[in-house]
Length: 424
Ligand code: NAD
View 1 (cartoon, rainbow, N blue to C red):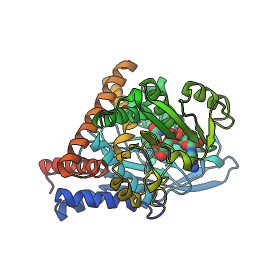
View 2 (view 1 turned 90 degrees about the vertical axis):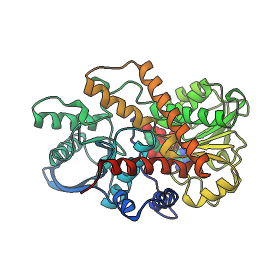
View 3 (view 1 turned 30 degrees about the vertical axis):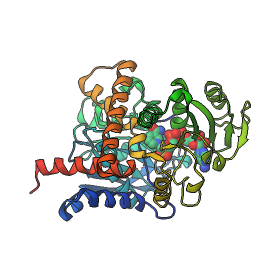
View 4 (view 1 turned 120 degrees about the vertical axis):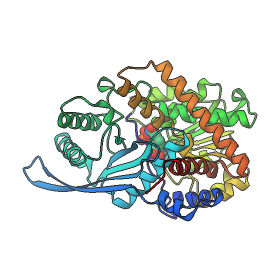
């Protein structure tokens, strides 16, 4: 399964605005000056390019590609590249800012960026996609760089596309520079542990939250929506740590067993059945909506955005929500969830294990040395736990939700670094 770098917060009720509403609230609580507010809101650089590509039928088609660097205050910018028909500059701008906060909250020395090309990769041949990726790389030669801006996979891209990018960039520089991109195949300098990194980070976030709420993982139950990269590894690792996973789900619906599901069997079943759980036995069938309302201790939405909204938030009985997906809770549901006293470990913290191991990939490329899986897991677990503790302390200090606290930690870090560095 391809690793996908953190992507969108989408809110059907208020598209892409939910991130900004949370950013605004955190900025107010921090007492951010108007000048600083504008510095942090406006992207540092944005580049749009036209990419003429010869298609397999001999026709030349021009694609539009973007790269937005929101901030380089903390370090080189980091963010995925998506290939999708819906790519547009406004969305890329919002996603680039989102990356700045995500890296800052887990204390990774990166700024935020995002890129994309408006195209439909499902209707293109491998050769067409390769030419497009190479052309995009050449057009972005003065943007990308291991010390400047480091892309990664996102929607519609994976290790294959990252290999082409790394190769084209290296050729143009006359030497192999694998640190220009993360999410590469292992043989090209990809990192061990990256595939399971996000699910692992979700697990560490959940265990840290249980610790704060004095819950014993061996007596806890969990329901996990989404059984792809993030959800299945989170289910496996939570189970390994003693948690009884009573429900899982995917696009085909939910699977419930009060006594706990056999996660290893579910993963094997999914791998053998086109990536879905359809027909999985040993469980009662429920709907995705029913899964969200189960009386479990831990609810992990790890499928898609906007599944917990003002309409269904009241039905949630879990003691905590650990957001594996990006933007699973719409801004309109925040207040209802908070009033019910449910702890939410927000997406920018809970699913940052992936970008953490991307950072480790880059570190390994730069020192020219491969770390063992054990070292990677230990370091990423520690990083996630430290980030959780920082956000938790901040939520106590400001008497706000974990979500607002995560934004406060991130914005404060970027703003205070800017103050030390100074402007013009
Ligand atoms: P994936 O494609 O591997 O898996 C998605 C899962 O969700 C599948 O099991 C699919 O069947 C299920 N699903 C899709 N639509 C659904 C629906 N309507 N109802 C219920 N289930 C549905 O994706 P992933 O990489 O696991 O990503 C899941 C979420 O986590 C996304 O929001 C993604 O942006 C976010 N995320 C992923 C990573 C990562 O490292 N993969 C990192 C950060 C955030």
